[in-house]
Amino acid sequence: MTSLERARELLAEFPVADGHNDLPWALREQVRYDLDARDIAASQTAHLHTDIPRMRAGGVGAQYWSVYVRADLPDAVPATLEQIDCVRRLIDRHPADLRAALTAADMEAARAEGRIASLMGAEGGHSIANSLGTLRGLYGLGVRYMTLTHNDNVDWADSATDEPGVGGLSAFGREVVREMNRLGMLVDLSHVAATTMRDALDASSAPVIFSHSSARAVCDHPRNVPDDVLERLPANGGMAMVTFVPKFVLQAAVEWTAAAGANLRAHGFFDLDTTAEAMKVHRAFEEANPRPVATVATVADHLDHMREAAGIDHLGIGGDYDGTAFTPDGLNDVSGYPNLIAELLDRGWSSTDLAKLTWQNAVRVLGAAEDVARGLQTTRAPSHATIESLDG
Image (cartoon, rainbow, N blue to C red; front, side):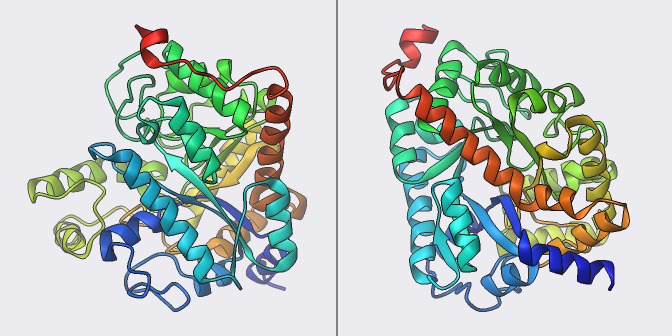
């Protein structure tokens, strides 16, 4: 049996629980949520990284759908609600393949049924507009993690890719973390500054996650996780989910991507724009300036290092499909996960290790957050704090 055949066999039992997919935003940008125009029951290879046939081929068993909205939108909260509505409509439209999931038990039930557990994660604290009531509202609508920042600071937390604002988490930021713990909403530390990572680990009584981040020691990009933070995950119980985005996994791609982003802005596009018009500009730039290409082995190098720093019980996968213009060779879309598992098998990872990486760690962490929340809800009332009362 080849490594790829073994990988597919392993994924049939313990499928991938992926931490981050931006399909809802891609549907907003491309077709303004017209799900007939991008019917994911059929191949969307020409337009998207994601559709159900390729998820099935890739061995995906659970997906955190990102309900991301841009931080510069004046109406971030209603836009986030539209994203949530999009995910709900996708689940309702494809009941044979997708199942709504709110808990670890729901994830396991979906696996037993052969359906893809569909969870939601909000990407960026701007989606709560400095309101703990809004945070609770998102949880009530099914959001099970929130990334504390996106690429820009929020008033109470510093981003990895912005200038320092509050030096990590402010007092209100720590209260956000505590309220997330009380709810059972996972604290996601992808995108945040290292100071914010450390402050959140200090403040959180529940496991944290990195829904789509890789190792800074392997690729020195501020979006990645420093070793001292990875080394704290065993005590916290959380997990870091390796991402596939070339500019976060391949050092040579860091500088190239910065230049490509500047070129997009010069043509009037947002850095992360993946519409057909923006991609035409991107492709022209790439033709004149060949892109450094990441591979499956590049991502595996990060996982090897992250296993050394954090341990196998604290790793997962968060591909960031449909949230990036480029992907590594062999991980071109959601059908590519078996190639990564085959590479890790060739490197000596055991089937026990791989079951933890793909499925078991993600289920355990969500379940642990639920356990913490049950305890906190017996001693802590919903917080009515405001940013003005805590940060002045």
